[in-house]
Length: 94
Image (cartoon, rainbow, N blue to C red):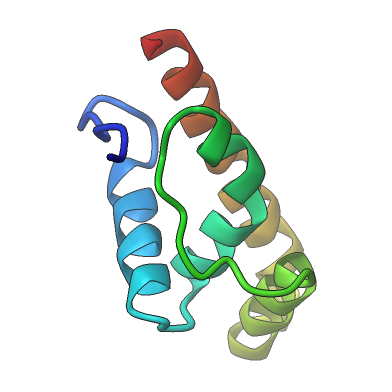
């Protein structure tokens, strides 16, 4: 059983999409972000399926750079900060 994602958690929609994409074996920016956070998300009770091999960080950055090279770094950092905020909210929620 997976822990519930509350709408009040930062990035809730993004994490939901990422978990759904991973479960369906779809590659997306959201699924790659969830792969990056998989160990910590699992510790907080979320069912992270099909996490795949290491390298999600580089793959996510490369996907962002392919669509907008000049903003890839800041977009990548913003996504990771949102993931960390979600993880902290999950930890606080118990």
